[in-house]
Image 1: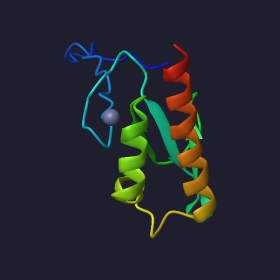
Image 2: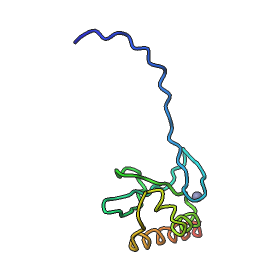
Image 3: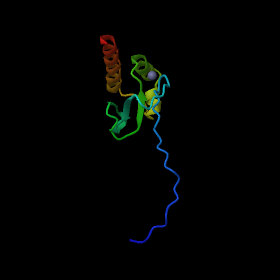
Image 4: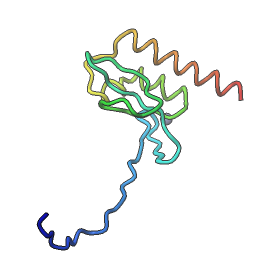
Length: 106
Ligand SMILES: [Zn+2]
């Protein structure tokens, strides 16, 4: 192994990626926003674990944000889709409803 000269790299700044809700633009690095991920064939899935590979977009836990993001095509733009697949749209609306039900139950 050759001797490596001491590297004078600047202290690595740990960049915490700032998540931004694509509907209300709220940013939150700590509290997890819910990730959407673009899959093959231009399909979209909710990715609560944030581990699915692919272009992602984030939404907060507000059902209104989900509905707004669907209706205003924010998801389509954020994920660079041509259009939201009708089935995915149903899934996303269902997720918004799920969030609303969860909130109402608290
Ligand atoms: Zn939001």
